[in-house]
Image (cartoon, rainbow over all chains, first blue to last red; front, side, top):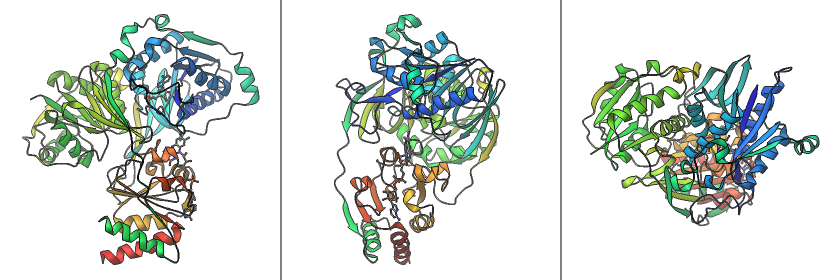
Length: 262
Length: 317
Ligand SMILES: Cc1cc2nc3c(=O)[nH]c(=O)nc-3n(C[C@H](O)[C@H](O)[C@H](O)COP(=O)(O)OP(=O)(O)OC[C@H]3O[C@@H](n4cnc5c(N)ncnc54)[C@H](O)[C@@H]3O)c2cc1C
Ligand SMILES: Nc1ncnc2c1ncn2[C@@H]1O[C@H](COP(=O)(O)O)[C@@H](O)[C@H]1O
């Protein structure tokens, strides 16, 4: 069985994230890493395999992104994935969801997958749309936003928190699965895992390797275009009081009343 | 004028406020046609409500073939509706489910997609708040029919009389769209408080509550507010995940957000930074949340909040 985990290389959320002059996300000037939410995807792929002793399961970590994005694949290999695929091509820069999902889908088809695992959202774009788009493109059932995953044979069941309800979703492999940060903490790479990762196969594909025409992707053909970005002005420093014998509650209620919240 | 499809947000026929916000926004782009996925018996009642906010047409899509499966059938139905009505834009309330519907629809229609807009101006220029609220981005769909998901509280609903003409729409759902089956649904119990994403006031608690949410809930109730929680509080099992505010929980943008015993991590900020007024109660004067606040109290939430609750009640009489 083949499992493909989609892992994205994102700018560190705790660093100063910025935009380039062409309004694309600065993916070079800011330290990047494997999107934390995709660690949960790697974790669930590994657990899926661990629960199926004796089955021959290969886990491929796949990323679409610039040179440095290979770091995201490396981390997944350190955690326990078997091989890596990095799709890199200058033409991809500035791609939107539609183009990114196209490239991912083509790469998944090339590798072959019985199970595609994604994170619930990328921590930079946070669209939570790529997994649904992959299901659409690959013609596979969409089993997304799972907090609990169970499987037996080719049957998969997940628990999904919706707006007003919790649902159980069932489907038959092959599927596209996305998992939330409620699905269970991701493991840290062990020293052994880090050493082993260095010897694991890592393939690099260009668009032409995937049979994708460069004119179908990238900033110039984006289906939506950013016209402007503005840094939010820092909030003006507010009033801070220290509570002493109930003075805090008085001041708080006074503030709320002055703003007409009471 | 072209139609603008607006997907109605509702719970069993009970239309929710974001629908009215969306209809208000849709009028800037064309003539709103509301799309109701639900039981046809509720169609007329729903139409009565949405026509007050300018819905000229109300497409009633019987969801008998749709509701048993995840996301894909809705995307198919909307594709068929779009092909019939050639809309100027398609607007959906920005929930996780609708974003997924929008994603699939974008591929089906070969159309551009913009998620989590906090505003849409005439001409279709959207505003989004990104990087945990540190940037705003103006964008526009440049290919196909703009598909835009819009966050709650993005516009003040404005009434406008529409014809509200009900039109039944029979969608054809393919077999491929029926492969992810909803095996069971458990509705969440109502708390009796306002819905987190729609509330004008949100009062949240974090690890600093120590697991006792009584002071937070009491204060929330005195203000008629919704209750929220940080992930630390959710991970500790003190509050259900549905209450989580932040990157992997709900994004809220209320008039007033009160953070209690919450340090203000970037992932929490991502879900509340666009609130109009921010207040915090925290023991630690160095807590990063104080960088965001309009008003802050350095103190123990378990003493400050109960006292404040009494004072609010006194004022309200
Ligand atoms: C991928 C990812 C996604 C995440 N998503 C989210 C998310 O959606 N939402 C979210 O909230 N977090 C999220 N987090 C977690 C986030 O990084 C923080 O760990 C979390 O927000 C901390 O919660 P807290 O502020 O309640 O706890 P802490 O950071 O522990 O802060 C507790 C605060 O309470 C104060 N305090 C203690 N006792 C009292 C008292 N008696 N009275 C008053 N104050 C007191 C302390 O001074 C402290 O400031 C995410 C993290 C990751 C990596
Ligand atoms: N460029 C990419 N490379 C690999 N995986 C991606 C990429 N973009 C998105 N994904 C996957 O899709 C999920 C959702 O992303 P998004 O829709 O951007 O929020 C992520 O958690 C990843 O698993």
